[in-house]
Length: 401
Image 1 (spheres, rainbow, N blue to C red):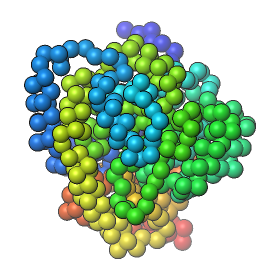
Image 2 (image 1 turned 180 degrees about the vertical axis):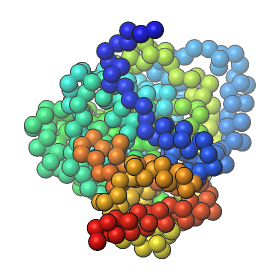
Image 3 (image 1 turned 90 degrees about the horizontal axis):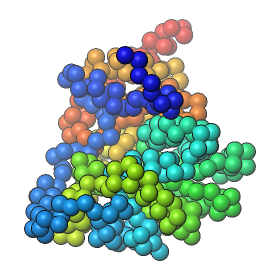
């Protein structure tokens, strides 16, 4: 039967990462593809205690709740954000969402009309690109480097396109792992205020910081409370299965997003929210995050050491200061999308960089995840990955000669 789908479905795309994970799942493959935390590090004891405390509160814990989310959790979120310098908001300006992914979707639903322009870094978060395009927006890339968006190119495109918003991941970005400089952060805020434009700051990885002597101020902490919407999630610091994130920002925008959420799912999982409140208040969540940082940093260093010892020519990367990913740019002659199947056949997987680009993609790029594999698995996987790159580069050199 031919189904009469809505016109907008032509803008829906399958996630390249999810498609790769399906391939990986079919065989014995060491996967650096998914952006997954390590199951073995989940705070099971803390979560068991948290849910037990929720059930001890009685049947009311099983009832519907307000769309904006469990108010005690929203207050706890405000307290945690204040440690990052994000202050001046009330719990009415916090919306609990089903993962930070829903925050991107709700924002897009209320802000984007067909043809609207969204400015982004390049490369940027693949799933955000999917959402923006599903609402028929046009995504325009701003020239970016390891310090963030180029302010001159950003201002030029603000003038040229009159965009609806700017989407950025300034701290340990996915996929590139970038950390914006403070100067670039301030320049973005100044431009947002000058041109009266909304900035959507996505910060799922900010708490996974490997450097102790540096401070990375969220854009929301530099704003006057009118231009930046800040979203984050418990998926990387607690567990993904609870699917709980949040967004904070100007009341008018949060209120409109809450109305859109009412029509979407009424409210996010109430048991998960109450359990997370208990986890925030009766469990050493910060101590747990410190342990994650220690483990993930050591795994990152193993992966970096494997690459440094290989001394691959024409392979460039920046050692991550936090987050979950290592971004590689290899010789321009290599197409990492085409080489993926060969890598999987050898027993190792990565994510090609091509789908992360809003503008012209660099096909010689790829993303590696270091958080979900043990140091031993990382070494095994890199022993499969590095020789493949060496062989492919040698083939190109032979072909050129």
